[in-house]
Length: 246
Image (cartoon, rainbow, N blue to C red; front, top):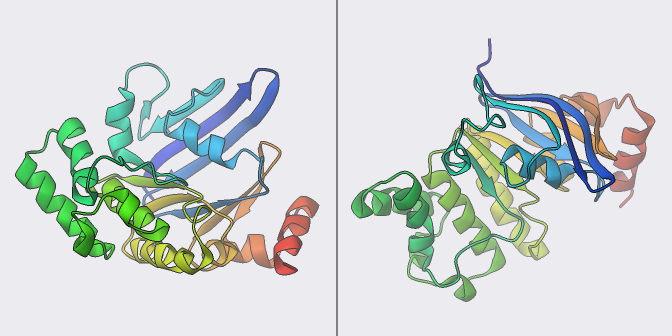
């Protein structure tokens, strides 16, 4: 029996009269690598932002283990230490060095000492190949390097789940591979990941589950072989055919 970490039940989100998510149900088990695919505007990023409590769902429940994180009993910053997020636009602090970016959350949220935070940050910066740049400011490094720092920062909080919101979409094409290779390595090491992505090869080759969203609902989900090899819904077939023909 797989250990369930997140259980999303009947999740909906509206902005005014515009319903962005409708009655979303799915689970994230320990060790899952789930890719969420779909056209722009299908609700993928909003789903991640709701799961991370950056947006407040209009209705539904989000269980982290047995706790409903929407009932007011959980402090969002403490929950986010367990359910980390890597953003499309990196969200690094421009006035801090690479190393400081990876230490600040550990010290403020996890109350680690400066020495411990530094050691852990260095471990993860080494892991993503950014140890030579610890004294650089974000403006001095490339987009791919910034995203690797952002991944190291998220990992330094020792999350149970990492959410990735289109982590390669702001990158130049030649930098996409360096970020995807870090993510692939994390997947091989058993990191639980929920990835909103347009990188179909990653979704097909690295995920154990693929979720296809269309117009705010989960239209289809299954193994990569099922979704890519034998999609059941016409909408899924149409969406994937655009990528195959691109």
